[in-house]
Length: 377
Image 1: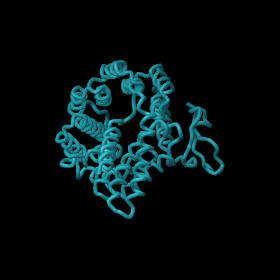
Image 2 (image 1 turned 135 degrees about the vertical axis):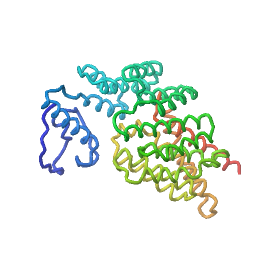
Image 3 (image 1 turned 90 degrees about the horizontal axis):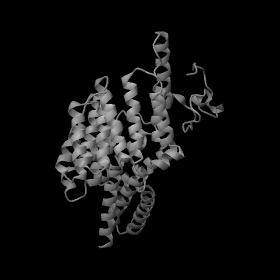
Image 4 (image 1 turned 180 degrees about the horizontal axis):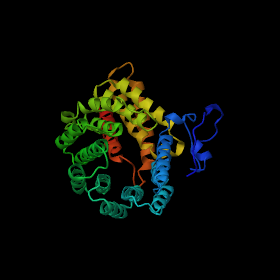
């Protein structure tokens, strides 16, 4: 890796990312005016560079985490071929670290999972478990694969195994993060089975896990809100969107990935509190944040997030039609939001894998039911 040294930077004259200038990455689009201190990518790369310098000085082999880091970035952007290439480069690096090799194998499995090649993905995740027995990241990935295959029973068994027997890496924070992810997985599976009492139990466990990511809490909030106004769901999910979304937004690092999902969760909380104008405001802010932070190719690949928020907005507008003075405009807005969401959904439904698509599908079902009910009045 080329040596990177600290220097004072005049951001106003920058035209490309420092890491691209150094030849580490071919191209890196920046949406924060080259403010490197706020860039998650920059923090990760500097950590790797610092760690490699220390290893080199101590006479040890460098850490080739750079390949897996880039692989995860390309995976996030939906560039599966480039992600696969990075993970394969990681396996060719000659490192003796089992952690590093295992992360690369799980990365290859995630590429296959997102391509809809479920059997091949399962084989990769099993290979990762052979390298590190009981590894939680591989177990959660196996559960996700079974969920995508509509095998909820096996998915639940795998997710529960990850909670109780999985190895979670170094440190309690890493362990608790994986436990929280496993709880969210179990909650999603129980929703698919329409066993809402069991879903409530897992959401409760997630809420009181010592350490959890804002993303897990936000997704759990959206999952609860998506079912909170159904006949069975209202019994169980009235409080979760509010409590989970508040925890997600407190002390969160509001970067370009965290901010939109937390804002969506706050919108879901407002919806369950029957503050429908507040809900619409938060969902609009979430969509504006994605527009502000995410490069076009990332936003296009993850546009199901926009669809999810638009379905929520459609339901909120329908709730506001009770006011005769504004009923017509809110009904028109509801139909427009639903139409935009459907356009996104129809474009995306043929993709073999979309992250957390099941939550968006639940909200879509609620929105369609609300529109049908409104038309039948």
